Image (spheres, rainbow, N blue to C red):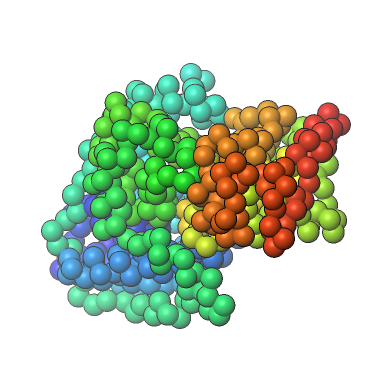
Length: 452
């Protein structure tokens, strides 16, 4: 029997359209390996909500591998060290894996050297190929999208292999219970079970139904009270479905807006490839001089934002949805992020970190680029002076029922007052007053911008 090869899983927890698996299976016995690495990412180790998803996704992947005559080996530690150990234990000839663009994974891939064989398959195309005329990564999405057309449509997805050859002897595997990925008391994940089923099978089922959503997608995606989005983001983040499988399932004409959003993932990966510290540093250096609010009052306001007690119904609904389900409607993500940065004048990085811990789909590139886009500090961003009006946004996008669902204090408030109970003079006694007035907040933010 030939020497086994290792298939290194990361955020690509699937068997279909898995080029690294196809390559590994073509060489002989395969040792599928997932490493829980909380060391290499440093401060960007995955957050609590992602850990909940990972626990269930690994269980689903393990069952899928067993159905193919294989099994999933679990280890914990620094990735390159664990891989070196498993290579020595098993005599593995090489390691196959899909390419990743987070800075810590790129460093680990470099450290592994010739032992690692990388494949592309987590994006619509190879990110390095989409370049400006000068050979640089794009920093403006509109230009990136135009250039990406030269690589579309993406390659057709691969089916999973019928069987996966097993090695003569399996290496030892950790017990997933020892990783303690699920929350202990108090268990904050009760709402997650109602909203999500992690794993490749659920991802494929959602993709099979995607055409039914895209006909009304352009309008429905902006309505928080409507189930008008695909909810594929955590499945894509964990690689339970490939981006190109999603692309080929969508109707190109009906899903033009959706496909541009899908391509945004490729763009943000290119940004963090070019600017690895983008999640920690302003994309525009002049904003290093902006004086964010600090001190006790700012911390109190940050807590009010995190817990959904700002007195702005649409903001509070979004933040409570996030805490209860690990996800938030995209339109509301923009509203809540803008509120933190512009209304409360709190550093965008505080919000980015909160989302990182609370979102099941918290992607390093997406999270960083999206926050800097809203904050106005990024390489491709709104002007800082563009301040979203949360009360107006709530009314414009008909968020009444959404608010009533997530802010039960307002369940009996009518449509005319639900977006701003204070202005209507009907704020319930158990619902907080606004932490800051809209006009006051706007003037404070613009003054801070003028000062730099």
